[in-house]
Image (tube, rainbow, N blue to C red; front, side, top):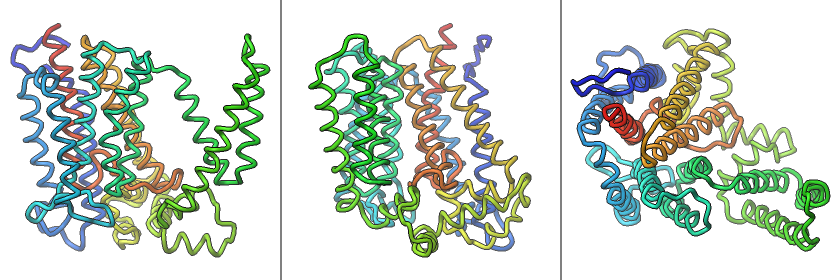
Amino acid sequence: MQRDHRGLNFDWITIALFLLLVGFGWLNIMSASHSGSIESYFDMSQPYGKQSVFIIFTFVLIVLILALDAKFYERFASVIYIISILSLIGLFIFGKTVSGATAWYGIGGMTLQPSEFAKFATSLAVAKYMSDLQTNMKTFKDQLKALGIIVIPALLILLQNDAGSTVVYAAFFFVFYREGLQQIYLVIAVFLIMLAILALKFNVVTAVGVAGILIFAHHFFGQKKRPQIFQPIAILLACVAVSFGVKYFYNNILQFHQKDRISLWLRLETDPTALHEMKQTILYNLHESEKAISSGGLTGKGFMQGTRTTGKFVPEQHTDYIFSTVGEEWGFMGSALVVILFVCLLLRILYLAELQKSQFSRVYGYCVASILFAHFMINVGMVMGLIPTIGIPLPFFSYGGSALWAFTILLFIFVKLDSNRINEW
């Protein structure tokens, strides 16, 4: 890309992908939320009208983000992070409860969700910490401090009963892995997830039995220098504790709606009638979403022609379940296009991140890609019934000002950082 002295040295491929996603998202919000004829695209009584206003303010945000000096984001990363933490703490005093979660501030006739903005603030803080120390995540002390940066906002969000947003913070481990975190941590994470699924799907004995086979097989056949027998026994005892802990957490701590979502995903309910009733009541949204997507076929029913979408069969379809509108009205081809756009955006961000000259910009770029990937994977997987139902928005697609603005800030800070690299080239 050649130097442009007019100051427009931005990665236009990333910006074009962003515009395509926002535009296509707005069309689907309009289709999922309209009732009868559309008199104005700015009808504030309709979600699509509000989203139109949100999009206008989004472009104002973009101009402000790109107008600031790139060094501003690195210099004030810690301040932005602290303000974000304070905004999360303030919810316990001034927060508005919606659907059981105290995660919003009521401002006039609208709401603002600080947990969405905390993601870009945490990304800046992680990038700042790792670049200041020039850390490669090899020492336990560095790992513990980096973990603390993401645990603080995640814990505050969890205490507000917003488990969906909390899960996204696990995406930061991809960033740590890129920056030198030992592979053993990912192996342990995958192993623990497998152990938890086995304990819930079958029982503790089965989970521990499978874990024991893997542990001792690795002990006797997977290592050149065989450690003492005490090590695999200690690991096996830890697996027993984890398995019982998972069962206890599931039976005694999780709320009923959370247990039902996991139960449906793992098909823990063996009674077909009870399973059907669970789908029809607790997880009605998911059941209708699956129907809408499957009815779309190859090419879909056409824009605003989806019978299940226009019939409002999927509650709140314009928010977390927006992808079901794509599936019904645009079919497999339209759904594939959305997936391709997201994949292209993620790959582009990763490509640009590797080109960065500073560790701050590179780490931040990986934070952006990881957060967007987590939202995309969880939302689409949830709508299709591939993973448990977790209420998080599809980036740039789902209705909502907080999510749209937060994702825009997250992405365009990186666009500005990358622009600084181009201008110095």
